[in-house]
Amino acid sequence: MKALKKYLMLWSCVLVAVVFTTDVLSAQSQPDYTYTWTSLNAGVTSTPFLHNIDDFIFSFLNEFGGQIDIVATLTSTSGNAWGKCGVNGSTFTYDTTTLNDQSTYAWNVINQSVRVDSHANYFSGSLTATEAHNYDFYSGEPTNYPATTGTYLSTKCSAYYTAWENGVWEPEWFWDGTVQRLVSPYANEWHNENFWDIGWNTDLEITNNGAHANTYSIVYIGDAIPGPRQPFEKDPGNCSSINTLNGGSGAPASSGSISGSGGHFATDLDSMFGTTGGWDVYEDGAFEITLSIVEAGTGPYSIIQAGSGTAGSCGAGCSNTGSARGTPLLTSCWN
Image (cartoon, rainbow, N blue to C red; front, side, top):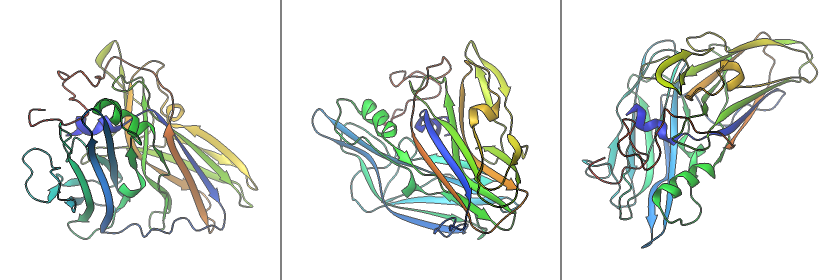
């Protein structure tokens, strides 16, 4: 399940700007113990020779202080054949997402719950996510991370890649008054990993428009069930050779100070991780930012879009059906 989930990732650029102003941080009601999102789409639409892919991702982040168990269910309203092999009826329920404190996990849809075979398998409907004990959690909302090819292409594989490369997203940021920190339920870095010929990185900026100097501590949480997980990289010459990277397990990936009245700090996950040049990195996770001075009205901004990257040797291409890590598209009951 974990390996299949990872195939959604590309190399893109995530820009996060945290600005201390009087703006409202977010109009969304988070955290909460239950969410329902509607008007979601995933699957393939095909003509005899051309294909369009729609897809989305969603994530969960636990800042509660104890273990939580989240049940996520897709409910179809389209009436089309759409489900993963063995799924009957209009619903699909994911494996329970059990997360320890300060842990996160991101799910995909295509390859996890929606198959893409030679016919038009298409999901339209809703996603409900509920914590079994009514404990609050944060979510990277599926309505915020859609992907679509935008045009019909000759293969489903090329349509899938293009759908994600087309995407432009703004990750959510929230102020958690209980733990006194900013949290974002999604961030990533994918570099030198040859499933994709492009990948992702997360750029982060903090601008302090307050009157006072501020110190910051940025924590990256690698996604895992039950988590948390230390970020890592692999040697492309020996994929069993792994280095742990900076951050994870509550340790700051970056910390420092920012002067007031417009002081500015910029970095990215590659710099914070301290990666080895040429090694393979494929990371999904979340951010926490702790500030020494909390002034009213903290407003973040972020954007994700495709960028450039390089191929490595520890991944698998779209045509490599024999890879232990699988293929990006569930096209039959045999894969």
